[in-house]
Image (cartoon, rainbow, N blue to C red; front, side, top):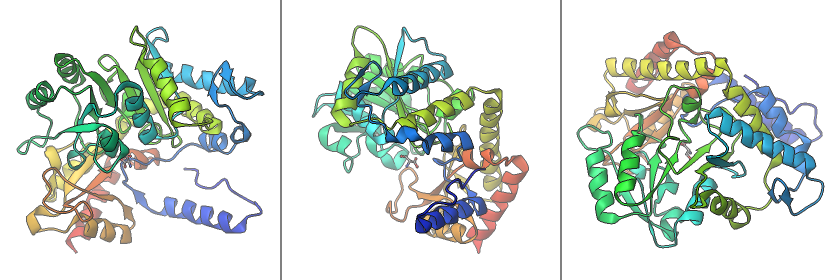
Length: 398
Ligand code: DSN
């Protein structure tokens, strides 16, 4: 794992802080489901001279001079993005300029949904994201969220209920995707539901993009109109995002390009785009497939062991890198906040998280979210997960 490249610079204060963060990252067990450790090549690209260049516009249509190399970088990144997910450039377009996941999702709505129209997205408390239409996000202020959740008994999505909701509410766009839902999403069923009410289907695959690339989680591309993703979670790249869209008579990709620039952003961060390109090449390697398989094996073992130790796992397990644990256990355990504080003191980093139908507040919810992507990058395997589960159990019961 590469943690420090900022060596021997004049700004000693920042150098010291970066070194300290590198040491912190090395010391802890990192179970934050949305984090990972990038390669040295990704860090080099991020710290390159590409950061000096303004490239407002798109390849071949920039507003400033001197963009010949910038065009090559962005085009290479786009080509690699399409290749990684097996997409034909005559059928799919990709925009690699979004600075991160939230602006990517907002750009899609800006492009395709009129203000005041409805976006049907998973409720935050059930595992959705703020930008799936939550009221505290701009996506819930400009557009109207039609929230959906999981079933109380099974804690998984109920597609019949989703269909009923979509038929009643007639959203303009349906979002399938999550930040805290451990299971596989049935994209075909989402497509049928979207078709039944004439809605667009957007899949936010930010959490599982690396698992799709590693062919260990179903690909949404056969069914979606638009797919957004961050690059820095299971895909193991820099903080950044991409928007894929179907190329057809509806002109989705042209509308999305205009919404990203000039609608939402100014000049793209070329250093970041180069780092995304490096990530996409790495994710195409056989070693990345092995990695993605290990991420899921580790998550299943970690969830299974915690369950054996008496902790309730939301939905009974996981199909991905992500696990939601009910630490509160109806008052018999500890709150999510207390769990995360205790675990951090013991060197295990997690985030507190609401669980579906949580009776506690989001600031001190009933659970924690765990993810295995970062530790699999550091070579952790099944036996390590058993040790980690036992350590978590010991800490939470102390
Ligand atoms: N903050 C990210 C996560 O942790 O899932 C989503 O934006």
